[in-house]
Length: 186
Image 1: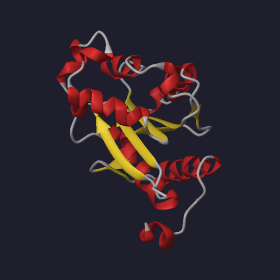
Image 2: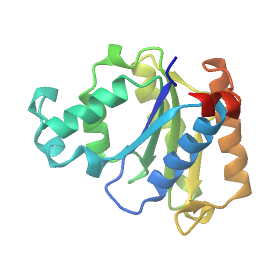
Image 3: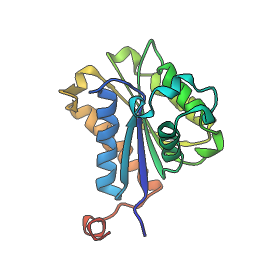
């Protein structure tokens, strides 16, 4: 039996990126607990064809592969930087190229990053309704992180780590926790 696949998507072009660091942190902890095979992408991985595509068929092969990986995942961690109170336009455009039935019933961890607390509700007011439209299972705990939650692009806040732990635990409704011996044997 192969390990379940988790795909992370950070809706940012920046490298390094706090959004990517947050998604990577959550995906890594989920892999430790549930034995996921992880792949993490950002918009740079999707590439320049995204901005020119009117339809999914207009994307180059690399961008098509990224979308195919996202929709074939058993679980997804979505991270969006907050830009003027919402997610960036090209992140939304990428999501728009996914057919709604392709994410139906998938567990999705929703996360966002921003400069300060005034953007904290972006996860509830922007991301949850977006993935609710897809009829995905957005997990109850959403994770928002501000600049003060990171040190050198690493999660450093105890409060943020606690919230991440809560959402990792919520994945157990979809995946049983696996012992490290079992994971190593695969």
